[in-house]
Length: 129
Image (spheres, helix red, strand yellow):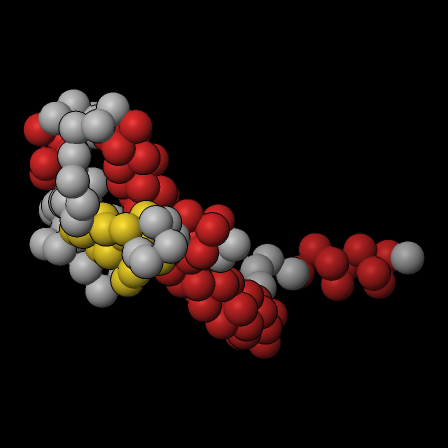
């Protein structure tokens, strides 16, 4: 027993092997976590584009019911008429989308386009994503 106490008393720090093992474990955790977080951020931006498109579609539907618009139209016209609180912004750049268009297809269903992110999608297309 005295021998163990003497051996344990002399240990004052971590060995190089122990430190390397911890660094390797942290590296493995980082290799797993970083791509997962990157994918999560990309999915969040895609969801933001879809939400902006849905807001445009709903504003267009209300404008049509009120009989105030002919289509195609864009986000700035809907904003100026009071159907949107603000012009939707691109979550990637933080600036308003360059191209916003809402039009009716041959079936009378609204389709929205937001730059290259959402092209000619209907409400059901966006809801199913």
